[in-house]
Picture 1 (cartoon, rainbow, N blue to C red):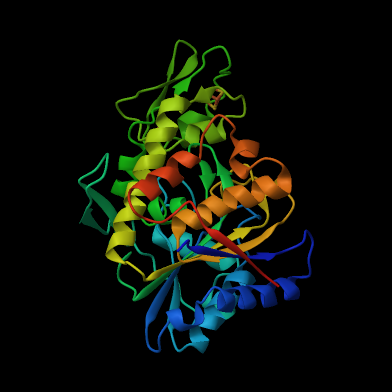
Picture 2: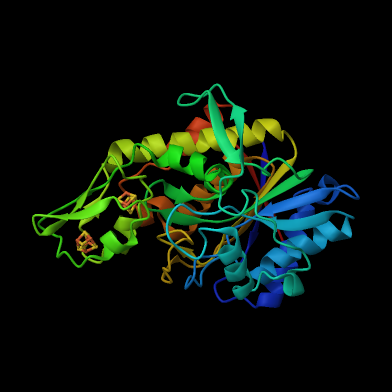
Length: 356
Ligand code: SF4
Ligand code: SF4
C-alpha cells in the first residue's frame, strides 16, 4: 500500500486563526492523535530561524502541534542542534535565546527547548549504517532520546542540496557538529578572482580561518575548509562557488544517510509535518525574506520520502516549477529522495489525501 501524504491548503495571506485550526485538522486527519501515548516524551525538531530571518515557521503554528500532543497526554519539547558557521545558532545558549526572541519561549509555546547535541554541538553518538558513504554516522547525542519524534520542517530551496525539507531537517538538522562536518567535507568552494573585490567579508566570517588574502584576492585554503558554505552566502559579489554538480549529489546522499540512521533506530516512531508557506530560495539559516511562491499549504505523513516528493510535486503543481528548480535549478533534489528510497526509508509513490 502506498504511504499517504495529507495536504491542507493555505491561501496566501490567509487569516492566522484559520491556519491554526487547519493545523489541528491536518494533525488528526494524518492519524497523529493515536501516535502519541499518555506519558510519552515527544521531541519536535524544527528550525527557529537565523537572526534576521522572518520567513521561518511561525511559533504559533508549531504551538498547535504542541497542543495536540499535550491533549494526548504526551510531554512535548522543542529540539535543535548547533550550526557549523558563526552565528547566533552556533551554541546552545545563544540559540535558545534567539529561539525565545522568535517566539519559541516556554511562556508562548508551553514546551521547553532541549538542545539535542549539548552546549557546543559535540554531544553525539555513533550509529552504524551500511550506506554508500558511511559505515557509521555521528548524530546528536539526544536525537534518539524521546519516545516519539516530530520533524516539523519549512520547505525552502537550499544552496547546496537544492531542497531543504524533511530529509534535510532530519539528516543535517539532527546530526552532531562532527556529523555536519562529515557531510560537508567534500564541498570545498573556490573564489573567482575576477569577481572578488577583496572586501574581506568572507575572511572575517569563515569559522575555520580558511580564507586568506593572496595576490590581492580572497583565497580558500582547502585543507582548512570545513565546507560550511558561509563564504558563498556572505559574498555580495557572487565571487565564491562550489563544484556544484558533484558536491551537491554527494552532500545530498550523505545527508540522507544520517537521516536514515535515525529512521532505522526510531522505526515507526517519527512523524513529519512540512510547511509549504513563506517559501524562499534559501533556507532559514539565511536572512532571505523574499518569497518565491505564494503559500500553498501544509503536508503531513509518516513517510519522509513521500512527504519530500509531495513537497516537490505540490510546488510544481501550484507554481509551474518545483521549489528546487525555482531556487537552484543547477541541482537535482531527487538525488536525496531517490537515495532515501533506495535505503528503505520510504516510497516516492504516494497517495495524496486532501484535507478540508
Ligand atoms: S566576500 Fe566575496 S568579494 Fe569579499 S573578499 Fe570574499 S570572495 Fe572577495
Ligand atoms: S572557506 Fe567558506 S566553506 Fe570553507 S570553512 Fe570558510 S566559510 Fe566555510
